[in-house]
Amino acid sequence: VDLASLIRDVPDFPEQGVIFKDITPVLAHPETFAELIMALARPHLRTGITKVVGIEARGFTLAAPVAKELGAGFIPLRKPGKLPAATITQTYSLEYGTDALEMHVDAVEAGEKILIVDDVIATGGTAAAAVNLLQRVGAEVAGVSVFIELGFLNGRSALDGVPFYALIRYD
Ligand code: AMP
Image 1: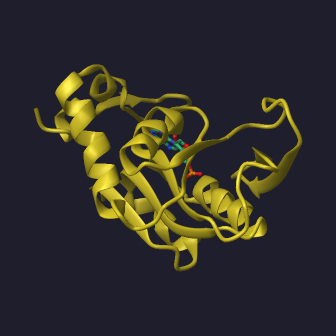
Image 2: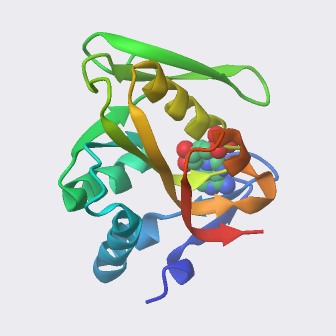
């Protein structure tokens, strides 16, 4: 089954004018899910990635299996107040207001080679915040990998030179 054919477009979710890219049909389909994880992991096999970072919440469903495929650890980035131990926070701006991502301060050591994984890149604000957070703790961000790129929003330009990988791009 073609990966793209299992992405469900949901119009006007979570708000009017947004076409939500729903990946749950891909996750539910055994062979296609496996193919997606392999395709995300493939460029990073044997490149020395030590940790794969997933962004709450859909990013977790992809980042954790990619980590296992690479023989790396998995680290969750979460919305404020969800992680139990001491955290470091990165705020970022949205169209209206700000949001933040948190990571456990002891999750990564300086010099580790990190891959960031998420389901969708739109404006790139979330991925850029993840990059900044990891760079602040001295990690080397080797790449940002997403399943779906909304190319018309040019989110990749927000990543200032960090290698970017997308499996499917909509223009
Ligand atoms: P952005 O910070 O604008 O790049 O938004 C990226 C975050 O919002 C990702 O974590 C996505 O899961 C989610 N997101 C943004 N736009 C969409 C969309 N059209 N469909 C599905 N998820 C989206």
